[in-house]
Length: 255
Ligand SMILES: [Zn+2]
Ligand SMILES: [Zn+2]
Ligand SMILES: [Zn+2]
Image (cartoon, rainbow, N blue to C red):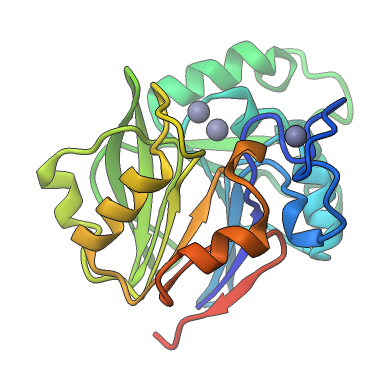
């Protein structure tokens, strides 16, 4: 299984428009963060988790030729805004894009992109097939995916586990029961927004504490804000099995 970090930045991305802080001005490419998303290649399939505003740029950067399914964590703009650009794959492969999301996310997609779902569809609009998921394991062409329900302030969102890979972004709290699904992974990619407390995201300390409890072999932090500081400074503070994710990072898991 191959995991690619498509984006590791918070909702505004890093650099932030019109910000001249040292992180936003950094020349290190690891400090430039598109909106959070990951791609998983497993069993000949390509799955993309979320289509934020940078989806187009991410697909171009990674030269992604096909997408077998898009799986949504939640409906916030920084996770769905790029959905319109799936039409490139509709044209290329002459078929719908399979989407997996909760009923609530599906309703939001209908509000955000009414023209995709209208009875009269203007020529050239995206063509998608929505598969509704609940908090139960589901399968896409032989790959089992386990949803993990967590809270993003008051909004229930999904993280996902595929074999020994766990992805959970935009989380502020999680029940003991759901935590069980995340334990002993080979790779955990987890939300860590910044150092100061935040109502809807884990702070660095909260993320480190949760990682400690979940005991993954390796953990990467994502959805990072410019307030977190520079990549090179942050990585020095972290234990050897934990690092900030960076855009374009790839990890191969041997299972
Ligand atoms: Zn977000
Ligand atoms: Zn900044
Ligand atoms: Zn969010």
